[in-house]
Image 1 (spheres, rainbow, N blue to C red):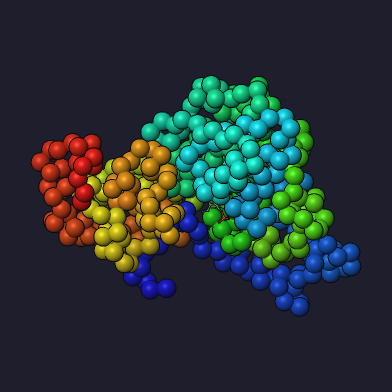
Image 2: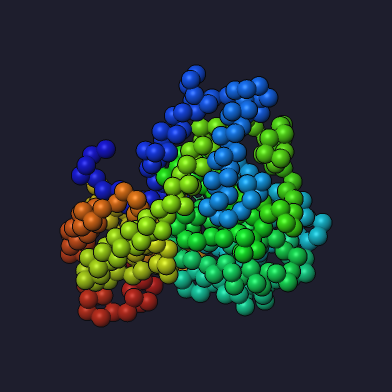
Length: 403
Ligand code: PMP
């Protein structure tokens, strides 16, 4: 990749750690551990040992039992399996489900599918950072609520939910608690020995592992059951049939083992770099933070007085997510920023910066420089920016005006 390009999109995906790639490479060719782990011969048993070792490594990071980890083809699949599987298995207990409008599409999608099956889906209110208050959850819970799905760290804004406080509310209800922990695992502490979550989704490629593999934590005590979504094999306790991809899960295990060793250091590094980024950008003025900016690796900013597309076009060497990245095909602004009440024009004019293990101070300083000159060019032509500088309140500017 062109060295002049800066990658600050770790929340979209991370590079694979070379140590992970090396372990994966040992699971592919004839002299490696390539066999089908379901086979009972010597080669298969060896592959199964490696798969179980990886399962233990993933479990260890979140302090779960290995038997509570099911391999999936990524977190999209884990979210689908958790939500569809739990709702359909426990659907006779009740058909009311609670979630949040700022969830990832891989949560909102299966919820929409359940709505078509007759489930009633309700979205919890949040504060303007996107946090769910325990009292809000308590007020929305009903005797027929079967499932509550709330993510740990929001992938667009970095807002962190207080899972422990939410779990206390749920302890008194029959509802299962599902958490999408894709952005938090390995970055924030997660201890399922003490946190009473029933289902938790994980991905490998947000944590220096390969794309296309993830896991679903399914609590054993008390045992949580799932109706399968895929059919046709006994693998993964029948909940996720299909040959287990040894190289992928070994990669995920290695990545999670490394996160256990150095996740805290990586998080501190990312937090320091994003602090440097904000210190460089804030003096430019007219930049609003979206979300609580509590996650160590995500900073989401809206830029007053510019068009989102124009800003992105002015930053060809900066790989960051734009406000509409998650819905690029539709061209509509981020559903997350909209849910937080940002006007469409400001939601469009936003960038999500996320950094990680391989990010450097040089990356941050280059990014600040690129943004400074892009803003100078674009704002020089913007009547909205001029009005903002002259003291017009944002609420007025972004009600009627366009940049
Ligand atoms: N949930 C969240 C919060 C995510 O950020 C992502 C990745 N964008 C996913 C789920 C989906 O993960 P995967 O790419 O492994 O399917």
